[in-house]
Amino acid sequence: MENEPLTLQLFIGTADDRLLRPHAFYQVHRITGKTVSTASHELMQSNTKVLEIPLLPENNMRAVIDCAGILKLRNSDIELRKGETDIGRKNTRVRMVFRVHINQPNGRTVSLQVASNPIECSQRSAQELPLVEKQSVDSYPVTGGKKMLLSGHNFLPDSKVVFVEKAQEFPLPSDFCTKLIPGSQAQHAASHVQRFV
Image 1 (tube, rainbow, N blue to C red):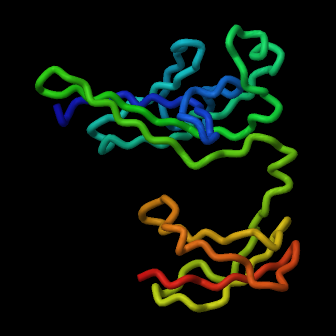
Image 2 (cartoon, rainbow, N blue to C red):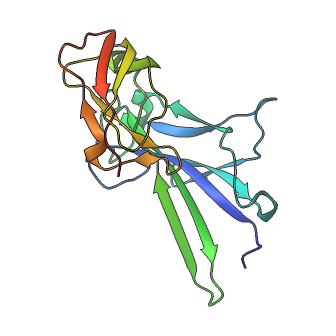
């Protein structure tokens, strides 16, 4: 069973505080072209578009997700669906959801699912979010303490800097988030590198 290929399913899910479910106003869109290296197949499951991507043993069960985009559906089409209560114009945050089903020797199937961090799909609010264009430090010893300078746009007094461990690719505990140093401006900000031990 370990050397059998698997199928990774990818769809667009909600990013609000409720239970994760397929997003009514956004769906995955299959990307094709010369720059796309990953094979994929599109199918519909209960009004949700799902992208299927093969995970092969010869690739160590890994795939580059360069074949998926996020497509916004028309509000008027979705709001006419029976039972749909979300308002599309206000519901602009999504998560990419990855799911795989693994057959077990006893005949049962184990399903594994993980969702990405929230993705903001609204151009208007994305322009209002802080944007880091340059930083003075790319790495630093775990002892921390050094000042890091940031340049970019839309830094607010309550903006936070989140330090992420690259090897793990998920945010560290909240101890590793830090507020901007007082006196930071909209285009230039400073933060202290936190201790990570």
